[in-house]
Every structure is written in C-alpha cells, then in structure tokens.
Image (cartoon, rainbow, N blue to C red; front, side):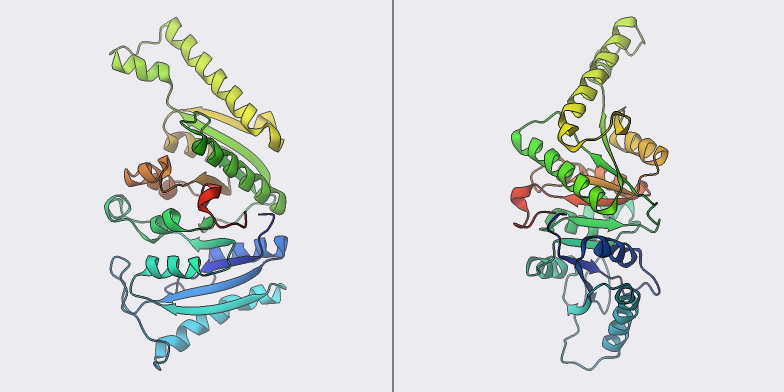
Amino acid sequence: MNQIKHILVVVDPSVRGKQSAVDKTTILARHVGASVELLICDIASAIDDRVIPLHPHEAHPSNTRLLGILDELATPARAAGVDVKTHLIYGNSLYDSLLDYIRGSTADLVVKDTHHHTFAKRTFWGNTDWHLARGCAVPLLLTKKQTWMQPPIIMAAVDPTHVNERAAALDRHILYCAASLAGHLRADLHVIHTFVPTAFANAVVAGNVRMSPEYCEALQVESTYRYYEIEHLVRPYGVSGEHLHVEMGTPQSGLMSTVTQHRTDIMVMGASAHGRWHRTVVGSTAASVLESLPCDFLIVRPSDEMQSVPL
C-alpha cells in the first residue's frame, strides 16, 4: 500500500446508518493520505444479484434517497479531514456493473462490507463478493462488523509448497501487501500456513492411522520442515518467530483456531483466476473460510494480474 492514493468503497444501499466498510476506509485513508470515493450501484429489484436499471436522466425518488445515504456516510469522514466524493451508477448486473466501473477507475483499493450467503449460493451460483474477488483488478478488502483493535493484528496466509514460480510470486506479493498494510496501520504482522500432513494422508491411504512412533516422528519432521520454509519466506519482512504459525489440519480449522487465539483483524489471502483460491472457492473451501472467520479479508491478486500501481 505504499502507493495507495484512491480508495473506492462499495456502499450497501439497503443498510441505514454506519457501515463498517466506510468507517474502516476512513481510518485507512487518514493513515495513508488517500482520497475516498463512496459508490452505490442502484438496483430497483435484487434477485440473485440481478438488477433493473434506472437511468440517470429520469427523475426518480430513489435517486434522492441514495444520494442522501452517500452524503450521510461521507459527512463523518469529511469531518475527519478525508477527501470524499460520492458516485451513483446503474446497471443490469450488480457485480458486472461494479467490475466495469472498477476497471475504469483510478482506485488502488476496493473496500466492501461482506455478509452471510447460503451454502448453495456461495458454492454453485456465486455472489457479488465471489465475483469481485475473482475479477477485481486491484486489491479487495472485504470487511465485517467487528472493529479493529489498536494496534490491529494482520495475518498473512501463505503456502510455501509452491507448485510453480507463479504461486511463489503470489506468496511474496501477499507478504508484501500484508507488511505494507501493517506498516501503515502500525499493526502487528503474523504469518500462517495450514497443511494436511503427508504422513497422515499416506497413513489414511494405507488404512492405518495408528499413532506409531514412526508416524509421530514423520509428523514432527514435516512440521519442522514447514516451519523452516515459512521462516525462510518471511525473513525479508522481519516477522518474529512468535508470530509464525504452522498449523496441521484443514485450512478452515487451522485458520479459525489461529484467528480466534490471536484476535486477528485482517486476513490477507491470495486469489488468482488460474490459481488454487479460484478452484477451492468453487468447491466451497475458501468460501467457507470467508463465511466462518470473524475477521476482515484483504484479497490480492498476482502482481501481473493487477494494475501497475502496487498495494
């Protein structure tokens, strides 16, 4: 986030009063000196994120109401010294309209409140958050209602078992973004890697999951090796040993226990149209993580998929 100058906030017009995305953007904008744009995509009816557009030249009561919501949300941020503009757009598809607008925007970061979705919708049909995470050309911060601690705790989720250089580059980019965000917010930076032990997987395949000495030793060796890989990966970012977490188990269970234990405020994860996040979110693993964890999520793309201005 060294170069961040403009933050775009997607406002939910169905929510009256304060919105977490706006409040947290105000905090971040004050730290980095960025301008803020509050955006509503007008929808006349919403069924599975499909909308019936209203045209800007039409006099319609909703225009006044929505502009009023934007002005109401902008007032506290402006009082805090943040440069805030508001914008109202229209479209037939909520996520398509947002992605089109983001592509033509100068935003370096997009912020949006996220909320619960049914299992069926997040698994089979997708939702606006899923489409934004997959298609947003700049980093996407999905926020929840909990407030950030002071100082905040930022957790970067990485996987050092790289299948190729592209995956390795994404891990480095995750760490860069997490460290940069931590620096701006004066936050504590943690790093986590979750894994299913090879020894356990081999034992299950062999039909033998007894806790033999050989099995326990294999688990310990693999855990130690994974910790060494993480330690080597984070060395350039000065992360202390007590802030490195290597957890055996599924991503959901490992992340949940660590996030809860360390009261994490923001989880930084990677997403790629060609990478594992995309495949697992279709299978609901990553979607379940987004749903179940109480923290916010900063989702970053590989640097070659993002705009030229880095986070």
